[in-house]
Length: 296
Image (cartoon, rainbow, N blue to C red; front, side):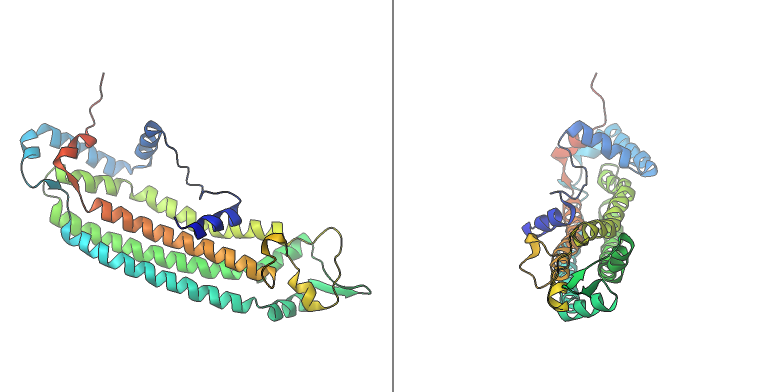
């Protein structure tokens, strides 16, 4: 995980993790893994394991590498980097577009026109009820989040299509006996929980962005007055963490883009690494990793 993405996670969520629930205890991880498996593929996996153990002569025959998908591995190694580079570029274009839309002059016009910043005898100040603050979010940041979600969904669709292509080719060229069907069955058994996890990460974008916006952009208890509408707009949501930016919307945009791009590429890289690992297969010396006999 890139350091820029780590910083963005902390800025957007207040924590250093994506909330994936990682644990280091192997027994707990195996229990969670088994619970996450699709029951139909779990049955198939068990049958392949049982068949492989029932025919030890089958284990001794054939090539050293089992379930090695040479053609599929080559496709994955070539195509996943192309997809990742494409979406890296798309997010840089996305960032440039929204930074332009949140330029200070545009933010000043929008805030004054909708009376988020108003003027009294002492100057300009920011004011908003809880309802108006929500409206401000939905008329600004929410639109940006929606655009990012489309990119993330699009990337997910691309890599899932690639996954279907790779799995079909993998099964065709390498699943020839019970032992060589173990790894493909394991991959298929985990698909449903994999989709659920990536869907949860996609859905988290809106909630994370809204919560941070509401916390950072709420008006101060005491009015702060400014001589001009522009200087007032520049200070809406401003704090020590984003003082380097011309306005707080630009600071929020930069952090959000780091997070959304990092999350999207994280999912893409996860699929890439998963398939480069699976398609290598495993050696006959590793068959004991798949034993399902219990020790009394």
